[in-house]
Image (cartoon, rainbow, N blue to C red; front, side, top):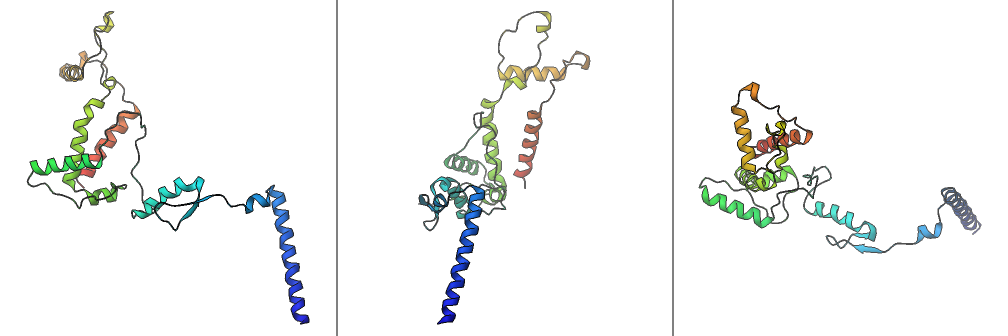
Length: 220
């Protein structure tokens, strides 16, 4: 009996010492014990009912949980979103892509189809190449290029007019066809009559790199 009482006393002293140390740590950090013990409101994850997360972390948790539910891991590199959502961007939905692929398969008897996508669209390059065949990726690319002219910025193609240097005012904004025709005529002129080409900016270089890389991926 005395041994039991001694063990109980030792345990009580140990708890008191730990309690004192915890109190000192909380005071040094200026933390309130009551606020730490209070539990915030918890909600269930819509992708897994067994997951209970704080309300303020619900959106971030569900985003990560959805990726795991779709079979992605933390090591997977996701395809990037448009850098500027306000810019002119060609966007195709799931049904738009399906119509593009159906039209391409009807016009080409040798068109090769991929495994298809029943749920979410691929979020990584590796899965994109698995879901869509090279022919399908080419068809999607051609559809994007076909829809892109309405998004072109003609300011990048504009050339300094020779009449402007003579003091005459420009007649107004030129159409895309007129700008392209002017570029064609410029290439035909002799070197000494050519107007200095516009300096390529960083966006132009990136655009060419992305276009070249997309063409490489299409034939992988």
